[in-house]
Amino acid sequence: MADGTDGNPPEKMGHRDWLAMLLLIFSVFSVTALAITIIVKNGEATTVMSAVLPLLGSWVGTVLAFYFSKDNFAAATKSVSDMAKQVTTQDKLATTLARDKMIPRDKMFILDSPETEKLNDILAKLNADKRGSRIPFLGNNDLPRYIIHRSVIDRFLADKAMAGAQNLGDLTLGDLLQDATIKQKIDQGFATVKEDATLADVKAEMDKSRDCQDVFVTKNGGRNEAILGWITNGIVEDNSKV
Image (cartoon, one colour):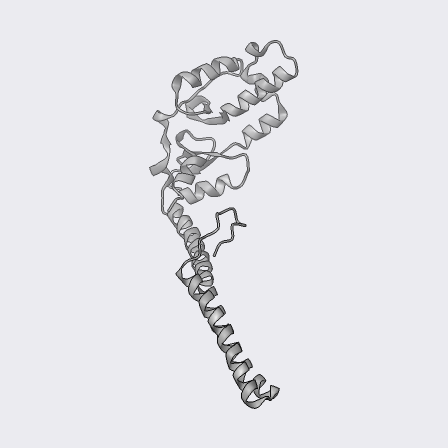
């Protein structure tokens, strides 16, 4: 029976709890009455000890086993369920092809902006497109360059404003990429997999870097190939549910 220490409200006593309590009370009174009877008739303590203690032990063991069997069974069931769920999730990802769940190239919001383009203009294009908050940047022949989350741009502009910058509207993509910390995160922010990869392969690539939340699908899995589609960490999480 939960006591509320795990953040959940305490459970009300059910039939099993009341039955266990009644059995315990009945056991105590019965054993006490038996002990008194033996003492009155025989008056020997050794007789009481030899007759009462085994009976008391049996009763207590029975009651405790009855009372805790439900919690033990529930804990064991939960443990097995968690293990089964983990295995099932991995199996599901391993049998789901990335190309079946990816965002196709023709449905992606793509920018091929030069580094001289102003960040405000990039955000305006993202707002007008209304397809999320991530911006994949591609080079010639649809080669992946990097992917930038809007939150990165917003924080960069906020930091500049806090530092007293007066030219926020003039800041460019190049200015953003000159920040060493941001540039490192962007460089590690995406990976690539081949077109016959599974979502398990995608997740494995994402797990290699804490900054990687996006994976591009290319024919042979190289960064020097045109992208076929795009997988986000959200897509992986949605397809992990069982």
